Every structure is written in structure tokens, then in C-alpha cells.
Length: 209
Image (cartoon, rainbow, N blue to C red; front, top):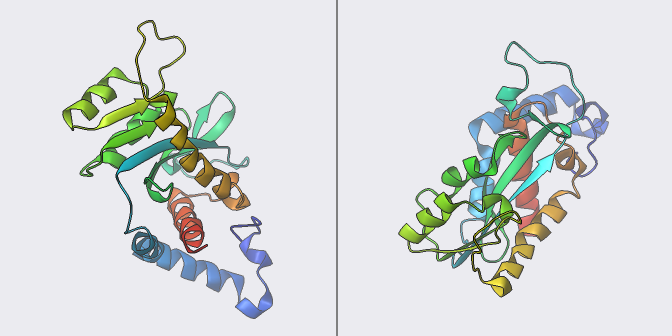
């Protein structure tokens, strides 16, 4: 289902009634079963260097759901229309360690604190979306080096390790692998809970590859 984006109703008959499978999926999701599996597989992370990246996804058109609409499900509206961001934290090997879902219009820096809170690391490699003076100051206070390319419109030049910045390709490679799973690439999940679980499922599968 994750790879092809097939709906639950198209599950093979030998797997049982599709609704029974879906209800079991929801129960396991609410109990954190998939998250615990992912945490076990990602427990041996290498934090010598940290990569940080965000990725946009556009969910397929849907009707409004409930009084709160889609904003409560990490679906927002950016220039391209409805979208969801995945802001990820990867280790020095490019493996996913943690992530947060954000509506498409929210600034990328909002996802930094939840991902870096309480974690020790030596270097943060992040793209231009995170080129903030406040973040650089915070990293300096934590004794970590910022390897973040400055924005093109920045007046004051900032030096950064260009060669080390190339290692950001590790987390880019992770997103390329993630996009092979159509259910995630297009955000087919209606709720943020199911979307989060599907990311855990796919990331667990990639960790075992």
C-alpha cells in the first residue's frame, strides 16, 4: 500500500476484510506500535554530524473534514496549493532519526526546536531555509558548528564549510528513497496520525534494506 498508494479496499482477499485490516492499523497506530518499531531500528544513530532538511508534499484534493478543516492535520496552503512539510533530523549516515509534520505555509525554523531539543551533536548541516542568525547563535551557545549555506539575498557574507556542506546529500538521498513510496510522496493519508505512522513504516523498511 505504501509503495503503490493502493486504497485499503483493494487489498487481496487472502488478507481478510479490508475494514478489519484498517481498524487493526488504526489501533496499532494509536498505541504507538509502528513508532516503537522505528525507534528500535533507529536507536543506534551516529550524531557526530547532523543533517537537517524539509520536504514539501501536496495531498490530493479532498473535501473539508470537520469544523477545523485540514489545518489540524498538518495540511496548510502554500503557493502551490495545499501541502504538508516533513522536517527531518538525520544522523551522520543519512538515516532518519526523527521528524515533524508542518502545514505547508509554516516557516521551516518552527520544526527545529522539537528536533534538536535535548540532543547533543557536534555539527548541524542544513539548507538555506534554516539560514537564521538566531539559529546560528543558538548552535554557538550549544558548542555546535553550523554548516548552513547563506541565503542569496544576504548582505553580510557568512563563511561555512563548503566541503562539509556537500554531505547534505545524505538526507537528500533519504527523501529520494521516501518518494519511491507513492502513498507518502503524494500524502494520501487524511490524518496526521496515519501520515506519521506511514512514515514510520516506510522508514523502518528502509532501515532494514
